[in-house]
Length: 470
Image 1: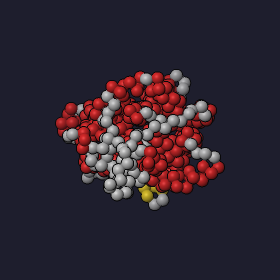
Image 2: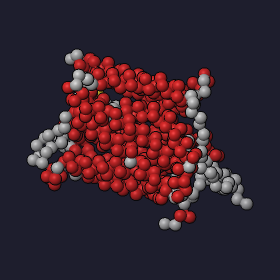
Image 3: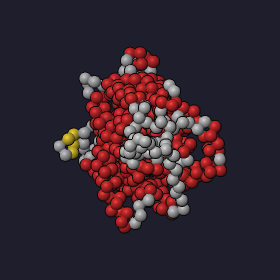
Image 4: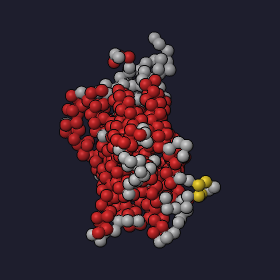
């Protein structure tokens, strides 16, 4: 398809670009597919996995935790390959489209895990193949999707960039909230089971790919940089930028080490030991983290239209200050989780409402760290390095997940050495780690100097600008 069929720079508009609804619709369906699969992963590995004879043989909890975080980590280091493919060769749009097809294949591989062939071949191997394909697809498109959002904007409508990243994140949580609630129901239902629980996310990923295809002529397709991308990357300015942003990303790495425990990880395992009846509803353990998405949906407009303007009247609320406040809130959320686990360790069965409180605090921290981080990663990147800087942001997530993964695998060995990280001790470790990280961040971030890069725009088109043709 000829390149001239697509705009290669943002139109001169004061309003929202026409490609944004397709990008946000695609993201909502894609996040449904990813979080639906992710939220049932530990439950499947510990409660539904069978051996080659068809006999139930679930993984121990610490192993399942370890492999869960390894999978999440792989999703977030694969963006390097996606960024190189995008910025250096295919461009963002086609990288997203082609890797979305790989993504679909991964989901449908998981949907066939309970067939006779998959059981005979080995469910663990089929699970591994499916997760590898998902990691390639989901990870490969990740640095391109949010950068593709930013590419739709130029100087004339850059004032809408913060707002659109908020709505972009809104679509993520809207899609994930539905799947986090529904997929565990399918998994535990005797009438449905793993085939449908993993198959539904595959169907939604297929829908996401179709929506993205339909919007191809509405979007700006910024051409790949080719060798120029490599020159920018290895230039003095490029290396300087990479060094500067890691002054910030090294701290968000610890944030992700904690946050990913809440989304299908250690907080879900904690739920298995709690009273799950709250506000007239009895939850499945895998469903509880749906409240994170619901709180995010409520907080995004509240923060953007009320809290941020109100706080800015007291002191300028820069992106770096938002991230700092979010780090402290994350530490506070783990204080609640630590207290819950202490009760469980002493024989109690606390109500899941206490975990809801932790989710309220964590969600506020997430809004301030994660959404701000997306915008920060885009604006700090030169135009031919947009996907690469997004990959760097995502690398902080990958490295963050290595911390709980390695600790989970080492828990039995550490215990034999007199270092007990089981139960409440595990959450105490992460609470203190996050608190110390937040304090150090306050001093380091003061030395960062922000610099904004946006895509150049097309010459003003009278029709697009609302005028009359001459």
